[in-house]
Length: 407
Image: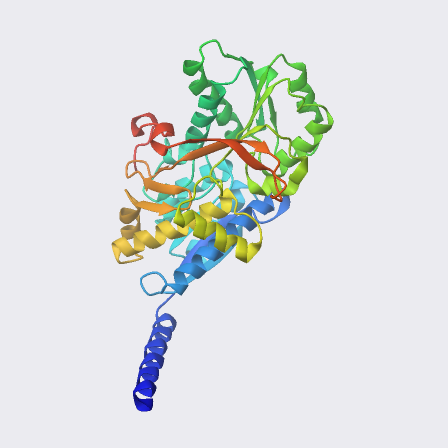
């Protein structure tokens, strides 16, 4: 019996040694990430890095991608388009990555997406929401696994249609994300609520991302006759705005407030009990929105490792890696052209739910979630009540309306 057990043990050691040798012998699959890793928006990059590292460790523990170990390389876009372009070129040409993921800003996404045809490398966007990169500027190599402006604002509009507010204004970042959020809000809400009024351009507020004093913009909104405000600020801008607006009496209950990205846990952890209650907030993923085994496993593993709840940016990076691994398995290869083909039409369950990447425009059809902020003594941050969820099919415009002509 003793000899038999020794034989089994020897065989297992040989198997493990062969597996280890295989990982060592095979060239690793290199994944390049480009996020904002510095400045007032750096928390978004840090959460994304955590989500990416969790997914990579899970994939490697399960044998890697097609038997090859996965390695990550992170670059800082600083939120600037020219820096983002340089970061992606470096990853592709110097580091020879197999795929690029990330991108926090719509401005950066709009700049980098067009060069992916030149680089002939898949780009999976996990955060930036401009509809252009899967719309009028779509291309063969650019994909997105997260909600875009179209989808998130479609939800905001359906929610706004149920509220009492009739006259709407906005405050948002002064670049494509803020302007497109306002544009789509008017487009989608007007048919749903025909008596809705939208203030003209000179009465709405768009602030540069470098803004730290929001008092002029808050005063402008307070002085308007609007009883509804769409806020598309995000990251450090949104945190500063909420703190200053609270001091100025903005959240006095006299107006309906919709924050398109107010349920970002980066924001909620920063503000904690300073986040006003009963505010409608959107997100691209909410950790408590569903109790699927996949979501529960993700939240549990993330909490155990980082002791915070995962943000939508952490989820985006995590989901992108899982989608890429699934595409590589489907293609039985990490060849860039074969990965592109495999990603088109790919359906996969990730923590947010089942997503399907449309082959025609490379936009993921994914569920959306909004909710109202509320205090819970058991939670370290504001949580959500009255959760409002819609399936991806109900908030994603048909391909024919996106303007995408695949190149």
